[in-house]
Length: 309
Image (cartoon, rainbow, N blue to C red; front, side, top):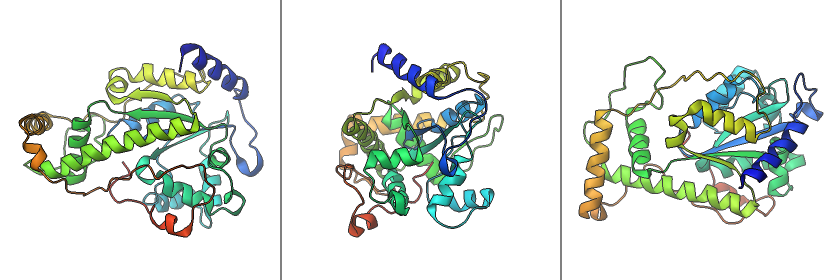
């Protein structure tokens, strides 16, 4: 997307996203909804927190992974069908009617299946379905250039059970002492496939997401947040304060494992390692232009364990 196109889109959105208190639409629908499209270990939580701290971009979090939904339902005091859950999600909007959530590729199409269980949304085209939940749908895409580091970070979080480290906390969870080449090889491939799948999804839709790499996000979090807000038509809306709540977990052990993996790759030894599918590869499931998926297809997109952070 050119700078001019970004500017024009942001201007249109800023015209539609008024400042001040927003009167919700039917059913409590917000004025603008955005998706943070991600895969694990790409800095998506850093972006969520930075946008939340602006005070103008909703309260983005991971609301639509089935594994987390019971906790959100309990916190929001909501039960019943998925439509009621979505309405509770809409209530996380800021006063200007903006709401956001992050979605991982691993369960994106399971989220679509849940949404199609709402009778009035069941036969909508895909774009209309997304608009029903995220009005004037915008996409913020976070990915990572270095897939080896992404795979090592993902495996370490999975194996050690620690997906985040709060700012100021010096304690890292005890994890494995040796690198599991097979597990990391699988996660490097998963990261690559999921990244390519998001790209294909946007291309098929003709969507032009705001896109940032993890490496650039951590280099200038405040600048990235300001850029994302500008893309959403929210430039200058709300205090531009970024309070990092998480710190990087990479340490000397991470560096040793990255070097070990790259050495195995360079020597050809990695070619002899069969990847162990601790996290399945979810490839792009074909066109999403169709309406409701058939029951057999629905069964193939059940949520995947350990793939939501």
